[in-house]
Image (cartoon, rainbow, N blue to C red; front, side, top):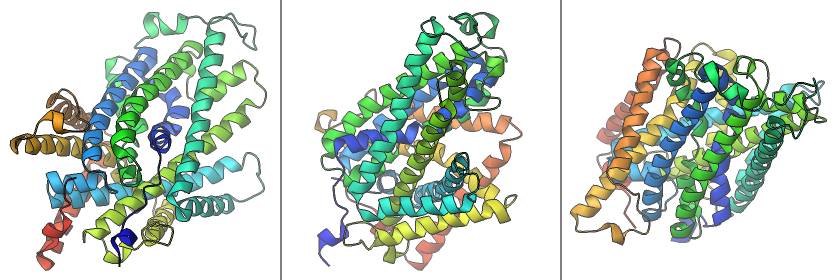
Length: 467
């Protein structure tokens, strides 16, 4: 079989990579979660939490950007971890990340079906879920370019909705648009005074993990690097644009929400975005936002199915997953890896019904931790890569893209991520996720060493070369 038959096509353009990263971050964490964050952390606490999470996202993106330009392979940080940390860690993070996204995709199908009942209450949820399974499978199976175009428009709708909301919100704050109940323009009254940190600074730390979850998904940029036509140009551009635009979108949107809605009333019943649109009497506000949230959910499902498929395909090529999954379709799509990822997504969906208190809980616990563990691995792999590069006589000038302030950035990223686990341990309701999450990670390491005993050549096969 020719080498071209074993390689993914480089069909993603710069605009696809940018919107893929942007869309992976802007989702239900903002549209549904921002109100809860304001309610629990207060206006200033919510803004502070999003700023810290945005800083962490920047640290991750520049580390991943350096690695992805140097090694633009599908599998991304899984291959980077294998090469610069060790095959055992590459094996672990690959399976943790795959399982996390595949489980998340399953939940998106149900969530999308539930949203459709607003317009079609007589149609069972499972029918809509099945419909969206077919849609997302088709988008991922047709060709990489089809996936990229779909995600481009999914993300575009979300961005347009946020921009429209910010404009409307600013007009409401300063009296350009009047509220339905005739109340005066809120101005900045809800943002100042005793309501800045109504529940104390400890509440800010409590919501920090939730906010960080909202930003996880930016690392999909690296997964797509192996299918990017000019990674040395598109990836640095995506890093620069995504981080600052996401921060602007998130922080401005949260500021507008906190200025209009008193923190006591934010996020208690419905999306705060719907609340604001209803307060100013915009026709069909709930239906418009329902459509935007549906788009956000399909975007997450689309990206998650793509990411899990590429990670599984990359591992299959190095013997860390069954070799048969490395086969590509005539369109250059890893169809077998896609089918397995989709099957696991549907299995996780089934466990939410038949094993909600056992297996499903474990899947969700691992999924919740996977993003933060992935960020730690990305930062440490970049640290090890740069140290190796310099030890061999290289310089920063040799790199097509280099993360600044080395080694401060990777070490700061690792430290902040580890502190999040401390916050989890301090919260009794979230503490069990640490047990299940770290337990699964330990099981992955154990599985690697058992597999290595049966196949001593596994470690050598798994280590990719550096471009």
